[in-house]
Picture 1 (tube, rainbow, N blue to C red):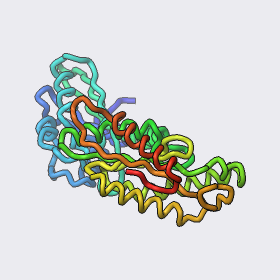
Picture 2 (spheres, one colour):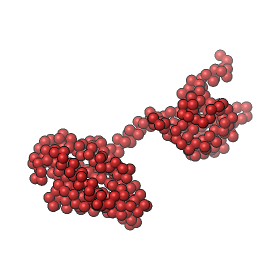
Picture 3 (cartoon, one colour):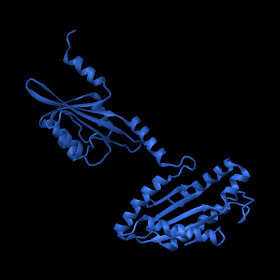
Picture 4 (tube, rainbow, N blue to C red):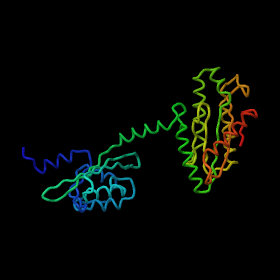
Length: 305
């Protein structure tokens, strides 16, 4: 059958990808229905025929990431490299979140020539489902499977970043290491399922003590937990640790064979440092660990700061 312009337009309009064709100057020569619909539904300021609009100018003027034309400089540079024949193809993944949902797109730029003129097809494919699946895998790898709070690896990464931030801003940083007293007795007396339930409760509780962007709680290992409080003095950190200790006791989780109390208690070592050049996170960990040791040696069920 003879392929008409109308036939080709219907094919392109049926494609879910957002497609735009530009010339070497960046001027738009064609957009499909998916492009027009997405632009309309996402508050694009251009309410007219797209033909002749300079796509590169539109990209350069976009600063927010709330519509399909919110492409950062890296995308614009990639398009120009294809136009200038510095590369044959260009691919770019970018976030394009709306106020109600997360979205990601893959942009592809491919050239073609007709009638001696160079043109460029720019398509935007929705890859949200793949990105959400990838995010879920990443989040799972950062969390402790039992307690659903950050694991040791995530804690170490966060601690390093927060240390550098506090060093740069000349702020104190505090660390608390929490150890559940005689946890082995709990497991031996009531079974590992009871022990797991105890750890889950403590993990959930720690979230209440790490709500700021500069805070984190984590399962440090076994029955040990840790908290980082950025820009927090020793007095404030000690006060928080004492509140935490009290709440753990108020769970009243039976541990009748513990020589401390007939319920689950904890020992907490707290330390604070002002980060400075020549020192690192290990120095603060060492101080908190020594205070935890003192808490255990002096009877447990206490905070030493």
